[in-house]
Amino acid sequence: MSQTVTPKETTAERQKREKDGLDVWADIVRYETAGFAAVDADDMDRFKWYGLYTQRPAEEGFFMLRAKVPNGALTSEQLDTLGRLSQEFGRDTGDITTRQGIQVHYIRIEDGANIINQLGAVGLTTQGACGDIVRNVVGCPLAGIDADELFDAEPLAQRVKDRFLNDKAFSNLPRKFKISITGCRHACAQHEINDIGFVAIRNHDGELGFDLWVAGGLGARPMLAKRLGAFVRESEAVEVATTIVGIFRDHGYRSDRRKARLKFLMADWGPVKFREELETRLGRKLTDSFPIDSTTHAEFQQAAVNESIRDHTGVTPQRQAGLNAVGVATLRGRFSGTQMRKVAALAAQYGQGRVRLTNSQNFLILDVPTANLPTLITELAVEDLHVHASEFRRGTISCTGRQFCKLAHVETKARAEEVIRHLETAIPDFNDHLRVSVTGCTNACAQYQISEIGLVGVKGQVNGEETEFFQIQLGGHLGRDAALGRKLNKRVPVADAKHYLENVINVYRAQRQPNERFYEFVGRYDVKQLESLDQWNNPQAQGVAQ
Ligand code: SF4
Figure 1 (cartoon, rainbow, N blue to C red):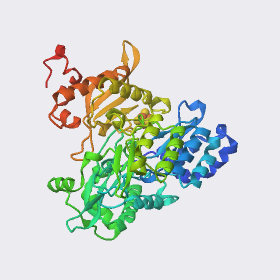
Figure 2 (cartoon, rainbow, N blue to C red):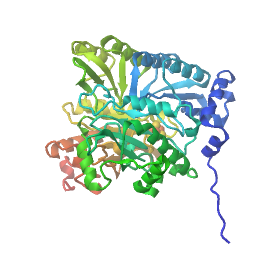
Figure 3 (cartoon, rainbow, N blue to C red):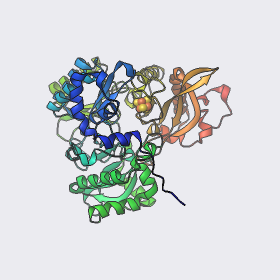
Figure 4 (cartoon, rainbow, N blue to C red):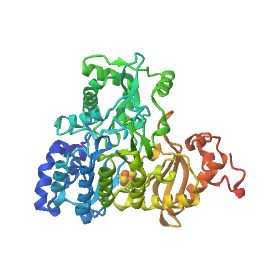
């Protein structure tokens, strides 16, 4: 006799069923006086819904606090507030995240509600910064100022953020849910790795709107988003986003957390069935965009994707005459409270008090008159924030790593700094765009699969001793013909990472074809060949495939 087996409920599902993540706010307020020792273990996990995440070492009882910054858009007042709170409560720590948010560390739960309330007073929220809920909505940092954009999509990003705020119909999702919206021609907001990507296009009829992408995601099993072949007008976007989140809520795989992201549902359904379900729920057909098949996909890329300026550092003239966006590279995402306050002041003094964060962990100051550029650039450099930064500084991102993250195998921020400073000295004339990721574990907080060089922290044994390595992945990139990096059967001790990168970059410089990007160069070789890539300039190692 056959028997139906009910899957065992996961801890996360039980916690969400017993108390919604949004309801933990009352407890965060209560723990202000009750203190860390009184915190219930399940509430500790629910704190994520308000951006509070335990940091290591756990026994110290500190939290990371992440603020959502839709489209990466901050005012000077907001950035100054973040910086002041970091100085006051977070030991002057701060990082820009790859989702254009800001996080600080060393937060005590006794200060949590006070800090979140102070952020709320300047229009910032931490709600949904972490947890199984709609996360920060990302977008183009040049929205509204880019002379070349199809339309300004930042107001839509704000509307989508508002749609999901405080709504318990969407606060218990199977896993996190990520949305990207851009009106630019360069598809710079990483729609390929978001659960929903609204990518601006002009369709065959000359109408402006979005091409709809669904179910991208990285993590241990990365998948790029699929196009549904649907054209979404700006006026429809909030409804379409809400409906897709509803599909995920109702059909996502809650019984296995490792398979709970939308990408796994898409892998089973495929884009045709997914669109059918979406249209059934909407009660109407969506207008067709370019069809899904591969030929017209290339046509879509031609129409919409120019990857040349996905990096926003340097000075970009705005469409507002006489004004400029000043893109600034941080050192691997670190952005201290002191730096935040300084940048807030500079943005007010030399611009109009507007700052945008980028998904490369960098930032822009907007609305700077040309006459103010030299002074601003000099004053930023005093803070070790550079407008004309090395390619290594512009293109290297890193996750939190072992300093604060409980899952990390290795230190990342200090190691990334070591790599950048070494390469700046060893190869000072390198001026090709190169995206490098330094990541503490196989979770993809620093997006190693879409970086041209991915260093992924792993542990291994050498002579019976536990040793830290970076496992190497090469060739990942977004944009035209986006592809995930290929994993090599190669790892390097963490201390040797800087020499490995120096050798690999020198091989690339010596052997590439004119104007060939790094990902294109490594794309010409198979994985086995690439395992010796760092030795190709070494005469002793001649004979390896080249
Ligand atoms: Fe932590 Fe891993 Fe994420 Fe890095 S990638 S922050 S080590 S979970």
